[in-house]
Image (cartoon, rainbow, N blue to C red; front, side, top):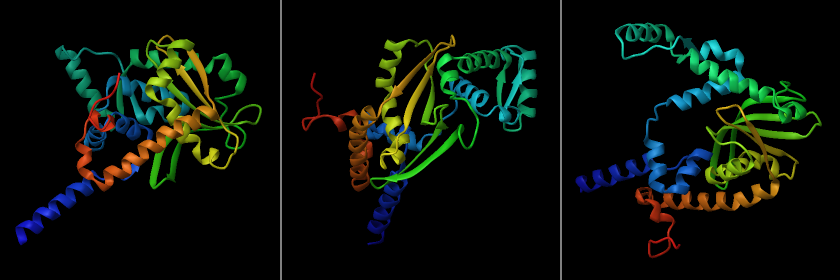
Length: 274
């Protein structure tokens, strides 16, 4: 009957709306938590937080300083709790023209961190900020490839060649108050940055072309902790990657699974073991 057909069509449209069309490191991270977390991530309109804006500012200062004025409006710090502050901020909004508004204090903090990265001994020794299309680095490089039935997308912070001619991909990670080998190693494991390395290096690893992957972790005090994610570590992370892709295919076959919470990854009885 017409009512049944309409209901079936509505369910079909709902499933299509929630279908996993592509994957990224962020989407895989949400799926590793639960299908429901991925669903919320895909459906959500994510408002930028102050920390996200500060991260974007640092990226711009370090990788694309020529775009600073077109992307950001830097103003004096104002208090929106006062009438004068509200008026000044309203004026800034009117003149922003789509740019992100940051205050001078935020700018100075990110400029300080940027300077610390640029002056870091490891960065200088390997020439990780050399800007050259042939034997240096390109920055903010798109990632776009198919792997096991899904398009994968992302943005590599840096891709190119170090001073010795080695192919290198590297990524900047802000880690708030975390610096030093122990804390950063733990954070790489917790955040799954080895999986991100596996994704970004795959087009080269697949062909057995040598590539090094570096993480430059920087804290709020400007301490830089450099790590290499080795080929062996990337291969181990690829096991997790394949498991997540298998789950994504299962969810696309059974869209109701997008409503599953963390128990999706538990045993047949719905419990994790401890």
